[in-house]
Length: 287
Ligand code: APR
Image (cartoon, rainbow, N blue to C red; front, side, top):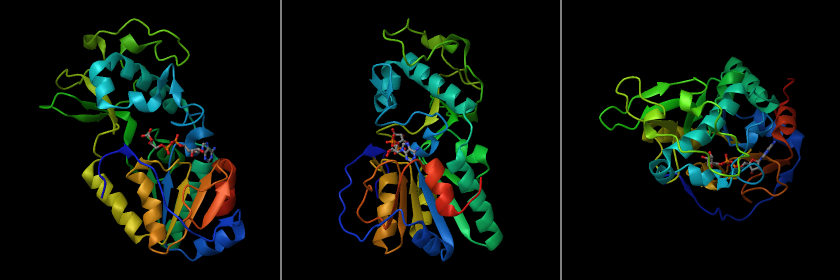
């Protein structure tokens, strides 16, 4: 089992795939009693939240993934905070799109029928919860949470302040060409308990996922009888291995992505296109 968040190539072979077969998918779904939806940045793209890879994967001259590291925070905390201030502002103002809404409505239907429906998300924007989903596991943390870097404190707290501190007001513009003047460490967000430097409560590259959260996700993946993979490039582990594990148990996996090609040949269903359109149709949900 891989605990650390890391990039890895996915190399899996096989399958008789059903492309855009909504009818066949609905039939399989209707026979499922334990459903897992694994979501990534693509599910929030139609809410105006930039994805990590492809278009929108850059902030200024930096790749998003290069700023999401403990090293970047250690060497340039002001820059990382500017980046996260930008992302927090977007997320706090974003509204759930039809894909989030369809998942929330489907969860309610499942509840009424006594079926299990869980979302495992790599997203940190909180939009599944805003849409009304209740069974959501946030693998990579949340933008509206902070954690104190003082090892003696380590307090995790919710924080919706925007800006989170005065020094970040007006900062974070992604189009700025040159680095702006540095913000002194003492002016960056501070812990309300001990005044230690705060950081975003996000699992960065090279860091371990919370073992309890990972275990919960793993249990769901091992028990489910169908998995929907929505808007993820499936290149960041451990999340990238969840759907292949379901498929290897002989259970159906349905992928919803802009790409024409599925992330794995093991996946039975593939629905190319924006998931704000494909997902409500596949789940037979009126928004
Ligand atoms: N509908 C469906 N899929 C979409 C849409 C859309 N409207 N828009 C984009 N996509 C797809 C892209 O084709 C791509 O495969 O969403 C995927 C987004 O991929 P990434 O940007 O790599 O996001 P994600 O898979 O969530 O990244 C995983 O990497 O940087 C880290 O921690 C970060 O949680 C993130 C993790």
